[in-house]
Image 1 (tube, one colour):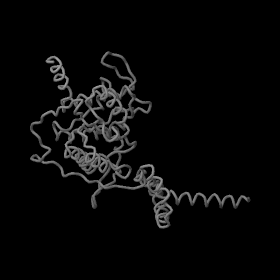
Image 2 (cartoon, rainbow, N blue to C red):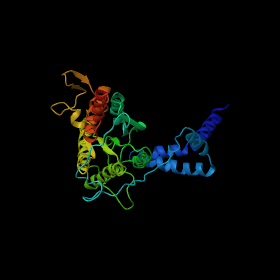
Image 3 (cartoon, rainbow, N blue to C red):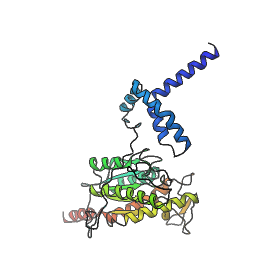
Length: 335
C-alpha cells in the first residue's frame, strides 16, 4: 500500500474514532480549565458531537456506558439547585439539641463524599466503624471523586449527587471533603445573569458561600448532620493561601448551624506545632510518623487515621454512640 493511501486510511480511521467518541471528547474539552485550550477544544468538539448525534454514531458508546452503569459519564450537568438559605426562625436554627442514640441494633448511617482528600480519611473512618459496631456505611460508604468540588459542577455535579443520596440512602452522618480543587477563578453553574470576578473577590466569595451553605442545608433538610473536613496545609505556600480562604468561608457557614454541622480543621491538625508543613508529624507518644503522600497534598494511611479520629470525636459530640454498652452491662449484671 502506498504511503499516500496509508495516510488517507489513518486519517479516515481517526475521523471515525472521533465521531464515535465525540460526546466524550466534548465533555473532556468542557471540563478543562478556562483558557485558550478549552476554547479551542470546545470549538472543535461541539460540531463533531452534533454530527455524531445526528447520525446516531454516538449510540454504541452510550450503550456501552449504560451497560457499565456509567450512563452519565458524557453528560454535562451544571445545574446548581440549592435549598433556600436558613433564617433565624427557620428549621435550621435549633437552640437545643438532643444527641440521638445508636447501637449495634440501631446503627448510625454514614456517608463520606467529596474530592480525593476524603478517600483515605474515609477509609480509615470506616475501619474504625467496623470495630465500634455501631456505624453502618451507606451508598457505597465512600464517594470520592478526583479533581471535583463545588466550583465546577460540569466536572461532577455534587449538588445533584448529594440531593439524590440524601433522598434515597438517608445517611444520618455525612462527612464532606470539598475545597481542595476550588481555589480557582473559573466557576460554572452560575444563575442566568450572574457573573463573578477573580478567585477571592467579593463576588466569588459570595457565590462559593452560597454553595457551601446550600449543600449543608440539603443534608440538614433530610435529617442528616454534617462533618466537614477542611483543606489541609500543603507543601505549596501559594496553594495554602487559597485553602485558607476557602476554609474561612466554610467555617463561617458552619457556625450558622451549631450542633448540626461540625468543622474538622485539617489545616491545623496536619500542621506542625509551629503551624508549618511537614510530611512527618509527631504522634501522642512523640513518635515521628509519615502523615502525607509524596505530592505534599494527600494523606498517608497514618494521616488519614489522624483525621478519622478527629471526625469520630465530632460525631461523638453529635451522637450517643456508647450508652448502649452500659445498658448491655446492666442487663448482664441483672441476669
